[in-house]
Image (cartoon, rainbow, N blue to C red):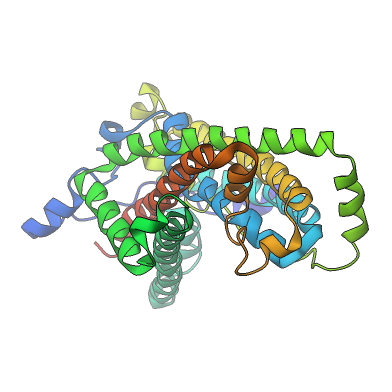
Length: 356
């Protein structure tokens, strides 16, 4: 039954799009058009592209644990466990199937378009593009705003930055746009340089937090007693690797893909990318929710508290000192700024296929 249903879903080859007619259009799309005939010139191994699609996904660690505590309180580890289960058992198989059916990065929008015809399909696609573009733009602006907030709250940077949140946000967005106008290759290289240290720093903070939890058994007792007091265990479906499929044209599948109608190498590599991103984030979410729920008091993570929106950064400063905490803050600021790269890559890969 399941195989029969999947067989009804159309397979999507690369959609050909007309080249830009104006000089400005050719400059904007230089190095960024992902047609089948040119894709191999700009592809990278999946474990490199992982960091481009992952900066948006992984950067949510900068604020997700704090939001989880506000939304679910002591129940945040339970909510996070449900989120991880939904991601691994529900979202990941769906993304893998979309990657197989739409290996050019067009994703579920093009799959749905092929099930309709005429103006109904065109209008439907325009509506979905509106939602997708809104989502990507919100990701870019919110990530830059969160980076500005982290910068302002740092004890060493605050005397110099004051309360200039808006100015810092606009500057970070302009800098990100400049990087992408330069080209995809530079963006992918910067993504790896930003995301890998961030993950390692988070592991250091969480390992220190786990050590503290093990050394203080009373923390478990306090947490268990507070489980029934407050919190909503259904409040935490927050993050997804939404750009994992849209950057598929950047994934290297091997030389044999050039001679195949279906790039099986790219499809296998993209599925590895999706599984790796989901696996890394699942581990980090479980660890961060547990450590922050046990170590951060309620008055600290409430809205306006020192841990609000920056739970792991709060622990980094309190457990490892302000020097390490500042290093963590800088890394968080960088990845939150660059999280917009994932959204911008999704926009540049998706929108020109329908609105060239």
